[in-house]
Image (cartoon, rainbow, N blue to C red; front, side, top):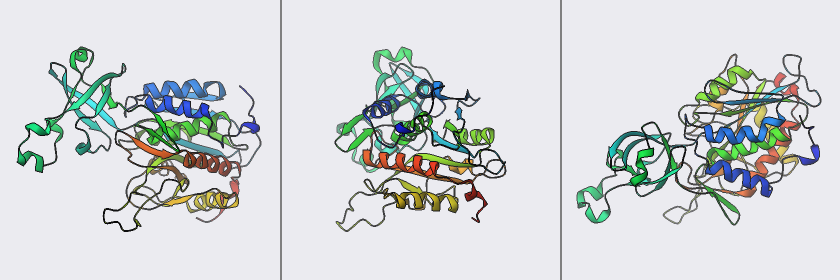
Length: 366
């Protein structure tokens, strides 16, 4: 296994990392069918792992033993789980209607109002198709007043339909692109976290056993994370994700004060969401690190949504957990948008925060 090089710490976004993220985002990995993403992950981390396995659900669980020592609750080196989910929202083919038309169901949180006319890739061969609906020219005034229903949508793949079968997954056909200071792609939630975790695994923070969990089925109930946390039994956990930014201008022209995160303001540290109250000791630690190094950060405003931490923190006897996310606009749609600087500062905060993690933090009161 290659020696860790501290001269190559993952705190800057390089062209190679952008190319890796592009591969990850263009891969199709709807919940329950993450194989294409999993193969990319294994390709990048296998040579660095002291231990690696793919579990029964499809999680990739990999360990890098510590360089240096910081004692944890067991008297051994601190065991830190870092998780990022491989799956994305999308669609599942449910029936063949003939002539290249297929009915489908959504997988994960997808807004049906936005689907008509969207191009998609279907199955492992990325067969091109389009989500078809009656064009506006042929609708009645009554139909135009109502939101379109899933029953009125079908995926049209044309003559190549013979290759499509029920159970196949489909994703938005949006190729990764760089737009000035921003990145646009269909699955930045959470291929950003996956790419960050790959870089951490290649150049891990010193003094901890790094337990990497590339999880499955997060978008349909945090299922992979529950299994991963039980199997790895860490001292604490950090979850890397991409969180919605509600920083668009208001329709009445007034200042927007109801954002949950904003692009360009750095990584978002979670205090609470619908499934987790983050460990206050970990919140304080990462805030102190950010402020000591002048790393921009923001608090993800409390409310709905959640991350794999919702399952991890309840595993076994309880696991102190925290989520750190990159803000993104238009998540769970055909194209999300993030700032490169937010990703870079997130990587810097995570790496440095883990490097400075003192096991005594777990002895302090919550």
